[in-house]
Image: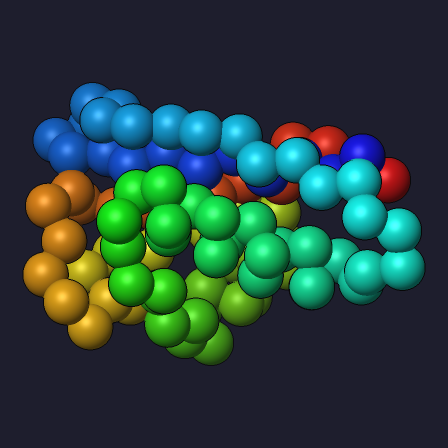
Length: 89
């Protein structure tokens, strides 16, 4: 089981959160992450965030990353979107 937790924050208060699960066999970790982000963006009505090199490094180190306004093309109504891997196969 692969699970990813997504949360949006504004002024240090959580606005929304959701957990995405994926049991699909044969997918790589990266594919599961990108599928989860697609579901999150659909649920939160967001464009897909742009992965900057700092985001990739944070995610590799901590299994957690924060996407701020710089990672989105359109204006967002929160300070950051945080995704965190909470369970892996």
